[in-house]
Image 1 (cartoon, helix red, strand yellow):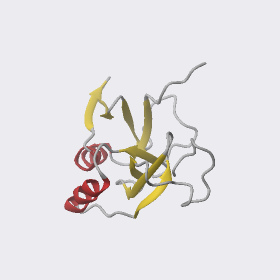
Image 2: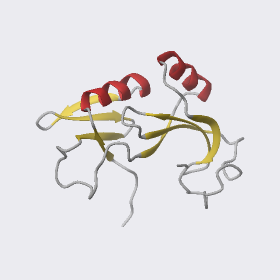
Image 3: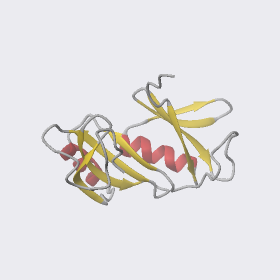
Length: 146
């Protein structure tokens, strides 16, 4: 087996339309409606499928609950532009910028919360900033940043 990438993840949310609005407005994702009115958010070659809490589609995770996701997203913009955008929208940055280790190398990240309090890490790859000296729980070159 040769896994290439993640196609989609499912977020269980309390309010699908509020989530669609936030991810489109704050992160620039594209809202998608498919099969019977189901909602998703597209970005790059991936998407986030949205399930309303208590009305999830089968099959589903064993314990789907809003606010249980810690997700790292890579931005094509420099972090100072990301920060300016977040500030303009009144989105509170919980932490950062801070050095971390991404899937393919060092990243610099800021952390925000979505409407369900999921932790959303917005990162840029930066060859000059290493991740191992911060957050010592990371192991190896492919360690997660969360």
